[in-house]
Image 1 (spheres, one colour):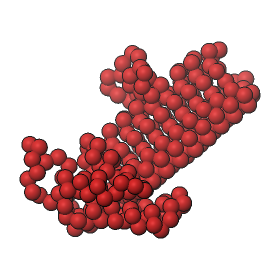
Image 2 (image 1 turned 60 degrees about the vertical axis):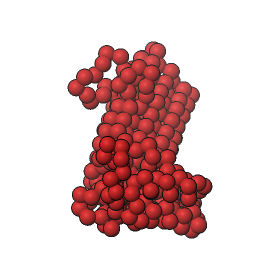
Image 3 (image 1 turned 45 degrees about the vertical axis):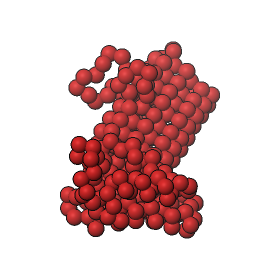
Length: 282
């Protein structure tokens, strides 16, 4: 363990084997730093934050800050971070709003400069947040998702597994797994085929996803019909992840760019009844 003499480390903090803490860092009470963590200069780890092993935090990053909210309670939750993450300059990760809850970051993620993870977010493994990405409160990001520069995600939205979000996109609805979001329009523009291939999925797996994609965005079916087909026809493989994701949406699902401007897939029929309108995708 190596702690620079200019840093302030609480006596109640748990510091693992081989941790390196650089100049002018602040480690508050109740913090846990796992073995092999490296903190560069001016890193702040605030109270009750828990970090696993081999995380590398760069200059000016702040973990466990108070939520940016107009009604912050006296008692807050935690930040829990996995292992092997790279948290670059000036990244901010805020605590959960309620005791017993946690803002969580998985393993082997890369959070680039100035990205922000708000209170109560859940970020999976191998996620990349590039420069200036902004996650609002209660956002969920699936494993291996990639969010490009300055993308902003609205509260309570979900970004699906292996989704690719383009730069400066404005995400206000759920992004399905495995798709690509165009940064200019913030609409779906097909599958994330590059990401799928890099993750090791073969032609057969991607072909199945294409078939399910056509059901979702190109079939002209109503929302109930889409869900029924996803549930019955795609019960194995990657495409099996579509049904539970779509069936549990609360904010609606991001439409495809080729749809008419402003059109969206209808999520909830009026008064609980299917009024016959189509979830058109072109």
